[in-house]
Length: 428
Ligand SMILES: Nc1nc2c(ncn2[C@@H]2O[C@H](COP(=O)(O)OP(=O)(O)OP(=O)(O)O)[C@@H](O)[C@H]2O)c(=O)[nH]1
Ligand SMILES: [Mg+2]
Image 1: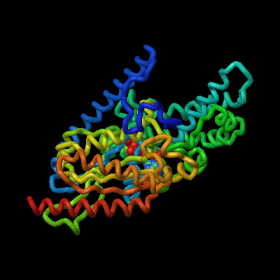
Image 2: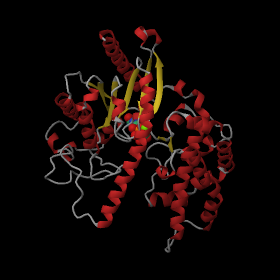
Image 3: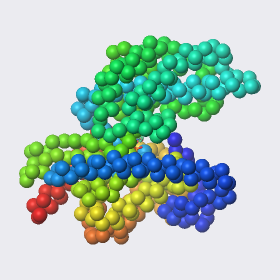
Image 4: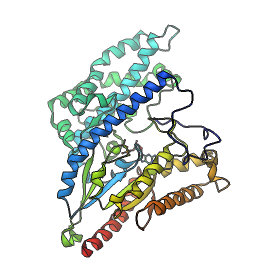
């Protein structure tokens, strides 16, 4: 979940672009230990991702004449969503996605059961009673299935921490679709569907969740309102279920996006899209790319989940400059997507005042056009200033969850990338 900061933190910070990663003032020894432990965890995850990427590099090198596009952007920027609009892509995979939906459902159920148990353990008057305790006990076998499935598909237990990570390459889909263990999980959930639904429909439970500020609806992976539908024995996920389902990829995910055989002159055949979770990919992979699609939400009003002292937009800008300046990428097209524009519009409608977060925005028009125009110029200026040699600046405003408009934009982007690639391979 993302925390919202109320204001720019101190007068000395001009705006998010100027803020820095220094430890907070007055940090206690305990806070310091926690911060260092978190950094070490992140380092470990990043090392594992690098290993996967090193393997991918070999794969990439075999695809010399194909077009290779890397999706980049901080965690949660929309990299995976932006290519999720091709329904045919999912057709063979619905059995696996059914399991992801069920896993997401169990995840929500776990949050509910934990909240009830905590309340039951509290000494004072409680909203829930022994009936709920019994209900939670009955549901324990369902909750256990979460670990069972995670053990089946997660490459590392330590990394999962309540969230499901899978290895890249789609192998997990085959496992989920075909393994007996997964089939058994589905049967356990199906056999308890009435109990799950009853618990979710319980007024006291709803009141408790509200009182404890437990919001299950944020983000993807929310299926509680569809319990009876998604736990039907013959349930097959719809496209929109698949888009909503949430699973994290550990390492790079490779998609063969489309056969460009009609355009396949001079052996240029396919478009490969690489989706790397988190923000940074391996530098070695960069040298073989034709294009990077760089995603950033304009979330100047938010701080990073992993470090609440760093503004999210500032973090994106740091990465943007690094990408633009990198010598390995000097021939690579970099295409900027301002994503989650639906959220920005909604925030502005509900009264967001930009200059309260970005003082340098000053008296410019506090509107969607004002915001996108201002930040576009910032990104363009960094692009121009840091690129090793001149190159065009490509920029789009996107709402990745709006699949139809995104499909159009991606189509245009591919055409542009393809044209440049063809041009270059003729020159070589
Ligand atoms: N409202 C809205 N939500 C979006 C948009 N793009 C993505 N999301 C949601 O934001 C969340 C994160 O999107 P992902 O595509 O998983 O982000 P990611 O960049 O792949 O994240 P990692 O894999 O963790 O690096 C998901 O719940 C998406 O449904 C958008 O344009 N608008
Ligand atoms: Mg992703």
